[in-house]
Image 1 (cartoon, rainbow, N blue to C red):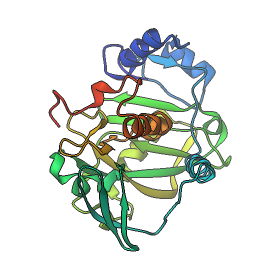
Image 2 (cartoon, helix red, strand yellow):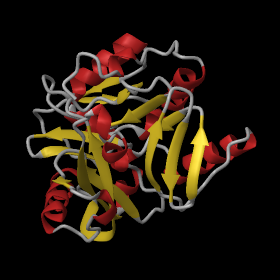
Image 3 (cartoon, rainbow, N blue to C red):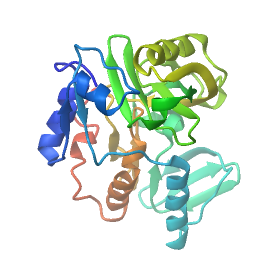
Length: 281
């Protein structure tokens, strides 16, 4: 949902045309008829993708790690990587559980990517984001997955998964974090106020009462596109960084691309535009 000449709606329509996705263009009144729990200003447009949905993140992580273990991966948890160095045919990395050696290395360190990729020179900014669960009532329990592009910011949310609350968050904004391992996880008053204003204006059946809260981190690249590339000094090191708050849904395909680049020297997936070349990163 957003201006017809904004960023979100034209982008969705362009992607749908390019990739042959089924979408429906809806007016504010059509949205209100179909989902009374959403209130769309008359000057905005909407695009609905019937086949779209949401991911149960922890279940996805468990499935990926279980599949990796079945294929022979050795999983090390509660093990902090302190640093690494590489030669032509060997990589050594230091951890809190000792030193490890291998022939090749893939770095996907999320909010901690910058220090581990310091020699690449990436300009990564870590942003603190607040997630809220608001009390749901009536039609607020039957929402689609939604995203609003508004003058005050970009807000998104999901259907109620427990029948009692709805998750609402702001995709835009956020506070820069100097140390991702020491981020404040308490409720930020300004973030809460922004969410309450959004809920009051656009989710009429949801309450402004906060039932739960969490903090997440966005690792932003300069142009907000992923960075997927080979290390400029070491052919045996590849990395993905700067997923800018929208990377999780792409983890399966990013994993395949990184695996191809590591094992085969390249990939047939069209990820060349995500390399460092020609970008202000």
